[in-house]
Amino acid sequence: MSDYLPFIIVGLVSGSVYGIASTGLVLTYMTTGIFNFAHGAVAAAAAFVFWDLHFVHGLPVVPAFVVAVFGFGAAAGFILERLARRLTDAQPAMAVVATVGVALAVQGFLEWKYGIRKDFPSFLPAGSVRLADVDVTYSQLITVGIGLVSVAALFLFFRFTRRGLAMRAVVDNPTLLGLAATSPVRTRAASWMLGSTFAALSGVLIAPSLGLDAVLLTLLVVQAFGAAAIGRFSSLSLTYLGGLVVGVTAALATKFTQPHPVLSGAPAAVPFVILFVVLLVTPPRKLIERAAEPRPEPNRAPLPRSLVAGAVAVAAAGMLLVPAFAGPRLPVYTNGLAFVLIFLSLGLLVWTSGQISLCQAAFAAVGATTLSHLTSGAGLPWMIALLLAGLATIPLGAVVAIPAIRLSGTYLALATFGFGILVERVVYPFGVMFGGLGFREAPRPRLGFIDATGDRAFYYLSLVVVVAGCAMVLGIVRSRLGRLLRALGDSPAGLEAQGLKTNTTRVLVFCLSAFLAGIGGALLISGVGTVNGNTLSALNSLLWLAVLVAVRTRSVVPAAFLAAAALAVVPTYAREFFTSYSTMLFGLAAIGGALAGKRPAWLHGGPRHLERTGASPVAARDEAGRVGLAVTGATR
Image (cartoon, rainbow, N blue to C red; front, side, top):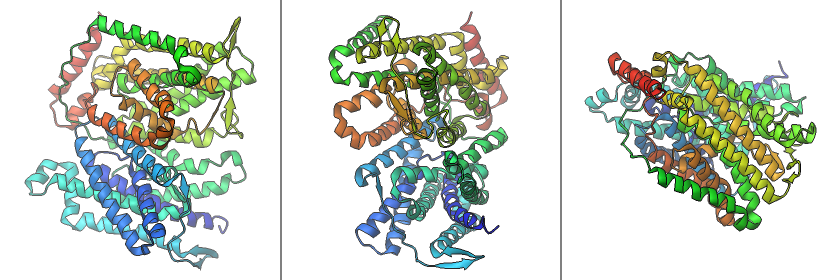
């Protein structure tokens, strides 16, 4: 037992921080229905504020702590509440994109303002005490004590104060709360401010052990998602306990994986394993999500066919002429073509079927590493290896489709994000992926008498592959399958009422999306020659979703080209500017895109939504019949 005790103590300390962070996260989700993916960014920003006040400007510890935690935390919560108020009638996926945009904007600002990483000395009292033959520092004891006191105070606040009772009531019936002379808006604002204060507290407490790194702090507090899952996103006490479980389990995993360097990333993946498993085993009835209020979409007249045909012709001519004007930037355009396929895969999910995925980077990584093995290793012809690289990702897409069968909206986003990080931390280090070297290489092809190793030839080859991918997506969108996918996003219950299997449709769309992303990853590694795990990290999946929404068009193919241009091509024409501001700009653009596009065609959520919002069964049957007519009538 003495061998495990030091790891348990370390786990309790880190678990206390996770518990604090996850408690604030669940608090805002309970009272507003919006899961805040920017929670970790608030924690990171508060740590930077404390560091700036105390270590740079010399403000004493206590005033700096109060300003960073209570002042900045409350201010951040107030700003987030103003954003959340704009998203109250938005589909959950748009709320996910908006908070992801906030996280990217804050992270980009911190990196621009303060740099990549700085030291963060401990500010808590030095020294230690001996407990059960283990030295426990005062800072560890203080951290655990702050966690226990904070959660206990929150429990008493909810149980015995008028504002706490109002926060509980605003979830069940905000209208009745308003009739009781208590403003639901102010109550939600107080909830956001309190939740963000908890996030700020966790950031300041954990920064000394990590250093001042915006990405690392943001991602580490994201590990609180696993603790929130243990609390079923509703129980504050279970959520804090879940934080302790996550911390201790991760610390013990560190001990068991020490003899195996290839498993070094497993302890950091423990919270996401817990998140993924809990979401899989929790009954769907206990994961009820806030529903948006249905409002009709404005009627938009379709564009004239001649205008569409002209735009396509101009775009095609422009793509063919790229080598004539790109000059030394031609490889950049080739990389952009690879990202077109990745954005096609994401758009097929988001804009066509109403699903959401935050693990597209894992699909692309499987495609890239498979092509490397098949060409550099097995020596297969490049075109065959490219096709097999796409096919190799299909089983992974089928695995991701398992939570999609049971979950939707925010919970599906959490499950896919957890899965993506799990793949990055546990699978990437193995030889089947990036291995000990951390990267993979792949050649450009020689196709018979055609030498595509040059930049110009490989660009045109990539363009042919992308055109084939676009034709595939357009064929899907315009086929009966496309109508089923749109109906799936609009009303799954309506599809089932017509005797159609929604589960099969969900699995199929995730497999198709994985195939396209795998082909995109394979093109990417051939274009640049080498790809590593950082290039295709799980956090990139958040960025890609943000960019896709930021371009503000729901037509899958145009959106893919615009998003790829914004991500891969445009920044090279202002490299110095985008190096400093790109993450921040993409985050702000995602917020704008989410606010502008908060009413997609697949907003309503069908009879399940009508049931939650109190509509009659007749209305639910009418909704099911409308979707059924849309699907069956279009195939006559």
